[in-house]
Image (cartoon, rainbow, N blue to C red; front, side, top):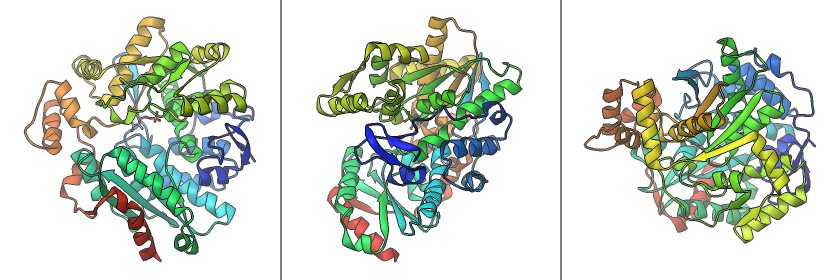
Length: 492
Ligand SMILES: *Cc1c(COP(=O)(O)O)cnc(C)c1O
């Protein structure tokens, strides 16, 4: 029983934690002994990307057998480079490109791995039924989950997206999805309607006799699942290893990382890598206009009672960053009662104050910055003009935070900026930031951006134009539950 809930005495082994996703008391599963068991991080740095991933996951999820084979199956032939996440130089800083996977979003690294972990966890626990993944998406998560789960034995995936509410490219990515076990469906409504509909479906279908009789079990591919968090530590090791190889640092020197943050999964993985021994210096938390985390790190008060902004970096438009709960658990030395009080206050009153002495500990390891869309656009333009580096609006938020952090801290340690999406995922905002424009849809904007910059379009995105649409269903919010019931009854 390596895992426990952040909120109290609920224990699980790794396999159960992966399959359940969230603990019965609403807490997240954590390994309280993280960083206490020996981990040879220096040896880890000498490995290839996939070997590194396997070594890290074997350490975090020791009960899951055959990790080498799972990792091979997850990544073989799917990413643009052997390195999974290449490190490139942009001016004085380094950019770790996390978007070189099958859907050009950083979620690919974890969502390629999660289905393999789910399959292995089921085998370990002797669960033979079909795992049904239900996902509501505002764009990026749905496609990455579809690619990860497609044709994985024993799994079935549904993705619901808002009709008319995703970009033309994101829609094309989803409705052309191949695979025998995938269903993609547009819902008349906005993202919140989709999300609410899917949450209702979870509740309503948990007791569905027909579904149970067929041995089908519902689950979610959300980032609170430890099976989606654990595969993200590898980014930090990979960047460090490449810097060491290039002679930019000696193994043991600290490296600072700047992370464009939404649900706090990516940056928490960096903190976990540090617990495993990796010489991580500061972790810089970068937010857009939804600056709830910036305010938290500065004031010690987490307050979601504020306006929600739709920004050019939509994957970071979030007011409740779920994975912060895991950090509160660790930094308080596993004080479940404190974590539970904070989370209850957040749910009921909309805010909590974290104790000053613990905030001091957090501030020793984290810095936080935020910026507006206009400031992000300025950063895209500056990076392109001055460094010849083209970045997307999420990465721009981090790049700006990196400059502010460097100025304020005066550090001359190497700085790694995590880049979470291809600029061609958001061609309209990037083109506008460079002063360009195009007539027509997003594909026209993609062409204009490519001819303006000469930066190649990722193959997975350029290939979309010729692909047949396979998923044309459009339903009302109220039809989600019968739709799932009907599709599942056709399966067996
Ligand atoms: C999901 C996402 C993020 C936020 O990552 P978290 O782990 O939720 O903090 C940032 N950028 C892009 C492009 C994303 O898709």
